[in-house]
Length: 238
Image (tube, rainbow, N blue to C red):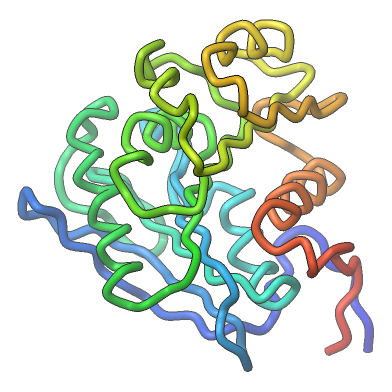
């Protein structure tokens, strides 16, 4: 039977509850999703939106990436709650620190990826998660970073400019109707990084609500990380 791939539909994968351990002594909770019958070709290390505004590892784009992309694109997807953040998986120790001590959370995730031998890691940040990717991504061995609706509230101009000339790819999806950073301003704010790939998403909004926006975001992620998997199927045979 074929089913349309949409909403909360979860495709087959090997899913494992994991813990991450930070250098400042905290335990963070998360999940690793792997292709069901193959080794992953690349790894998405996801960084969720602002926890004080309801962001967590199950924020819908990240949850759908984990639900679909191991099966559709042979990707490993790592999700976790940053310090002080709760979800049905559990609560990570510590307290929200506005993007400062969260550098230890990013480092713990990357250490897990290294120890697990997961290939070709990419940071995928959404909103607040983009700030963490911009501020701390260059400290780690990654292939690149994908920014979903970056607000540029916490990443400084110098932290953004530090990506200039770096061989690792920086890609930003900018919603046309974003609440915080729209395409014209994004072009100005990211002008210090000439090699950035800015993708304007027509009718896109900060929260990427709706199946068409979900599919657009996931397609752009796969286009960067494993383009051979495109086009992504819209149906799955169970």
